[in-house]
Length: 105
Length: 165
Picture (tube, helix red, strand yellow):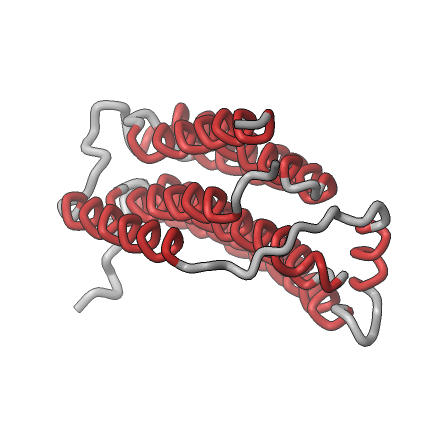
């Protein structure tokens, strides 16, 4: 007896919303980045669950390929994002996003 | 309740406790360790879904690379925020409300929808087929190549942005 698909979707939704809360509520830019990683993980769980339960019968690999592309993008995003945070820290000695507001009107 | 259900519940507990630890912990370093826990839980989901290669990639890329990168960044910017600083911005109540509402809506919709689920076993050569479809001109060779260019650009960009002037 397999686990129903909706269980995966519900857990992934919860994971996504926890990540969203982290993104919206953190001051620290690295904390925000960790929230984004959680959200990307939740999306990947969804992609793989749908591949397993809906797409696998058609013998195509789109779901898995999509998940791998998402992981690639997440890695690139983490590298560039953390480089930006390090650059901001070096110039302004803060990682608080509420203080990095030079572009604000 | 079969064994799979029990394993699923344990894995979701690991993933969700890890995720909650990430967003609720006041110490950023501990948040990063909880993030590793959450990543491991998600890797367990992949094994339960019988995509072992993805579980391996998850452990290598997320736990091995991204989590370490985040811990490095925390160490490098350590003096900027001490533990008893304010860690939440002023919109955290609104943010939490938005997250709870979104979660409730998603769960409501996801449980209602009747998904076209088919019971199949994953073919034994699925990893081989994945590799073939990644380099198949009729498959996913274009996204595959674009991903490699993206990684190169991100590498060069990260080095240039973080370089000492």
